Length: 220
Image (cartoon, rainbow, N blue to C red; front, side):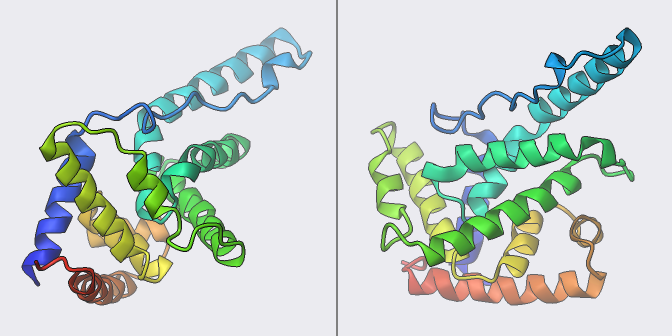
């Protein structure tokens, strides 16, 4: 594995985990459901209130997880807030269907985020606005903080550009393994695919990422 791959993946994982979110990167409030406006019996209202509290707890605990994975799955800075809301609107609608099978709601939320990001990617290809997919706009929106922060952001931009060239299925495996630090069995459960498929996708995705980083000048 090349120095480019290792340096970018480690820098990005550290930056994502430790960086204080900027004003643009802070997750917005959870979407309102409208459920509380319904006229229902008091016992039902208690059940609804409990469900709303549970959903709020899920949102607050996992909004940052969904946010950063939407970004790594190709959603631009300009669109990520809307797509984050879309993920949690879907999650709220299907909340009663969620069953914790031992690895929490992250696997369930990632599946929703993957579908939302895939739809966004297809839409962007059919209706392109910026030739670079909004990368220039993203870079122009950066305020001039410390050099280290700029370098970390540039590394993230490089990673995003390289990930864009990878098939979404393989990209999902790579993101979950390299950034979210999931094991192969956990990824298999999250994506509902065979374990051997995870290993195969990860191997190919690493090669593709390394090649793309080289093409983009990541070895310099």
